[in-house]
Length: 459
Image (cartoon, rainbow, N blue to C red):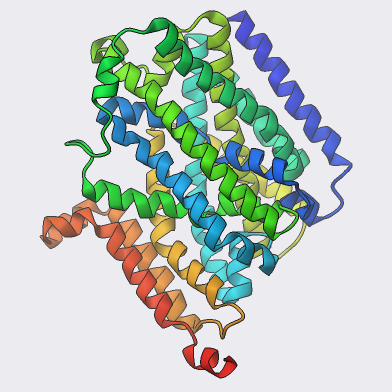
């Protein structure tokens, strides 16, 4: 107990210190929101991995694997595939447009209306994402202390918001390096200990390595491929790492490197979940999450390391989400480039998310899937089309915007309108692929919006 609190205090002091030291280096909106746009390959890979490895990809994945088996790997595997595809298809193109945020990218390729629409979708959806990360943080602190302690949870959350407010993206990039090291060491050490030292029933693990089963079918596979893979391919937090890179080649190499490492990480975290699945009964697990149960099996030193690895995973995703959503609100909705305004927005958005998280416990995977199900159908395909059409005639704004709206509406109804869908008495297959249908319609509309005549004239 005392060890955890002392380590937690040191951990938070280090991050606040980094924020204070970076305060003097921030001279402009570019410094604060996109870390000066001069980050090296190593820095971008580290911060990109720290951003994507959060509560969903650690605590959430192991719980999913415990519930449905090895197919739980697909969430992260599709994320890795999305990053690799981004590297080959988008990274250099996006960096050449020289945007500061994803809606800014939409503004440069389509227009102001597109910028504000996508900004609104991201800001609203990402409040839920941030709240989900804070919910996971609260659960982790409760586990580490052996009791619920709202005061410590509030203090940790406020400090995360505070150092993000002070140092902006510059501090986030630096703290991400520390956090990623803790994440990787903690998770890898846990897997090695379970299989090499604890042993137990590992044969059941190897016998049940399957990509599909009765708990995870083809409809789940295709839905996650586009919904989850799409966020990693062209999501606001992922692309924010493109914007901070020093050039297009750095952005491309970073996405490729991070994708390959993430694929390896997906195997490691899935194997932890599989060990728990075949060695721990539901009665033994109780209300503990699978990864939290694994912590209890480790020697004290390894347990503390993994706890701080998980805390780092949550914090590194939370601070990135907060700074990106705040920068988007100020630059793309308020149309300002004010560091003061972004700092105020960081406090407001962080405060709203903290309030939502403190109201009750929620399922992190449900929160994130709900947010992604709205964002992905409405934004991914239209924005990808706009990027490719840029410099080649562009798109017809009205038709392009209709693609975003239609896709987004399908996502909202699919996530929150189950009763409405049931009242329509549609075939079961339509329910299963509702989000994908929305994505398909948004793709068709955005492709139809391309100014083909102008492209032919240019040729």
